[in-house]
Length: 212
Image (cartoon, rainbow, N blue to C red; front, top):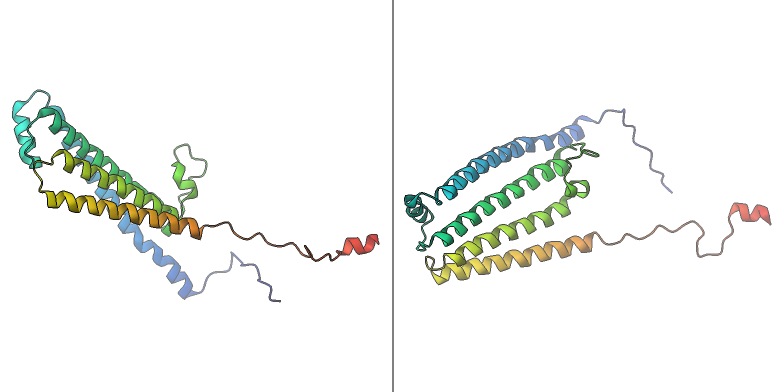
C-alpha cells in the first residue's frame, strides 16, 4: 500500500510548476479592466438619473428622452417607467460585474482573506466555480427579464419579430440556467462516507483481543 508523504511547504516548487501556477496573475489586468467598466456604469447611471429627474419639470426633456430611447410612446408615466427600468438594468449589470470581479478573483487568482470582515458578501463564503456559474446565469436571466419588460412596455415601437426573438432568447437563458443548476446539483452530490476499519465484518480489533 502506497503512503502519501506530507508536502513540505517550506520547500520551493520547481521552476515549471511555479511558472504555471504564477500564470494565474495574468488574469489580474482583466479584473482591473472590469473595475473600469464598473466605473463607466456608475457614470451611465448618474446620467440616466439626471434625465429622469429632468422629466419632472422640463417639458422638452420628455421629447429628448423619447428621441433618445427611440420609442413611439409619449405618455410621461410610461417614459418614466422605461427610464427606471433602464436604471435597474444598469444596477443588475453592475451586480453581475461585482460577482465576476470578486468571485472570479477569489476563485481563480488569489484569496481575498475577508473571513470575519463585517462587509464580506454572504455568497463569497462558499463561492467556487460551480456556484459562480449558477449565480452568473441567474443574474443574466434577471437582466434579460428587464430588457424583455422594457420591450413589452414599448411594444408599439418594436416589430413582432423582434419581440418573438427576445422572448425565445429569454427562454433559452432560463433553460440554460436550469441545466447549469442541475449539473451543479449532480456534481455536488453527497459523497460516500469512508468505511471504518473492520466495520461490518465482525473482526475484533486489538483492544477486543486483549480484553479476551
